Image (cartoon, rainbow, N blue to C red; front, side, top):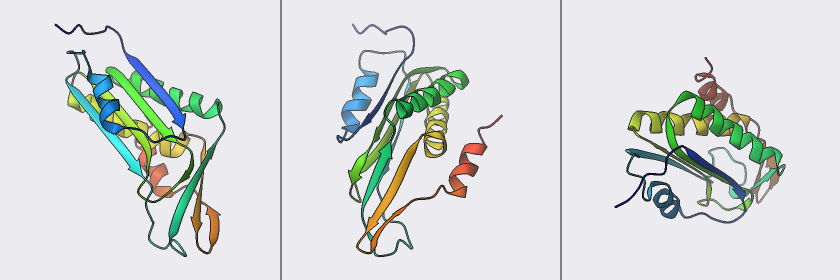
Length: 160
């Protein structure tokens, strides 16, 4: 008979390697019957309309240590707003091709509303408050990606 592990857990990773979405979700839910909902988000590298020369790759850079701490802080803020059983955040860095998975957010809670809300909050804050720098590479050269107003607006709705 499975036994639920008391208390919340969380894990944050910044890595070059691909991740296995199914394995990450299964690991969070395994043997934890108090979890009633798992919400997840997977972000993929995509070609954006208007990208001159067509996107061939995106390179993500970060400051090791600083980035991990920022991700942990974002997860901590989510924990302060919702009752969460577990959180897993993986953000990849390095050179990625269109279609590659770039980010994974998995949130486990007793109820779906908390899981959905926390997952969306974490993703909105990752887009605006995590120290990553993105460079789009095209056949015409490369350029750094600026912050988008839409991302700032999405994150601002959580400010209370």
